[in-house]
Length: 120
Image (spheres, rainbow, N blue to C red):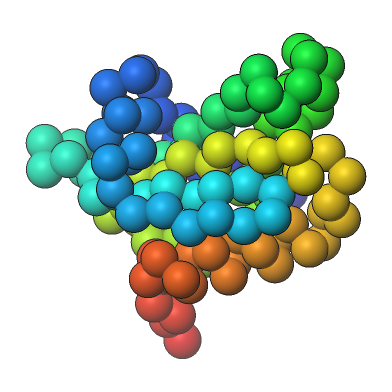
């Protein structure tokens, strides 16, 4: 089975653009979303960031790995391709149940009106 991965936001300019967009805070992360620039084709792209306030490098990397995995599982199926996303890790993501974090991401997409239209 092929592993489906959303694209990545490549540079700081993209992160700042998405940061200025809409946001939804959940216990383990903050989801930010902004429209894809007009000069780029619509494709799901995701960025991840975890500040030093969350913990040392080991903790931040663990949070980042957990965020990447929930994004890999949820974003391709549920997210609109005309938006870019950034997941900002919070300290609660270290111990939060993985299943709850997946549900939180789907709920956050719904709150931001970023759920993809279901096609039969």
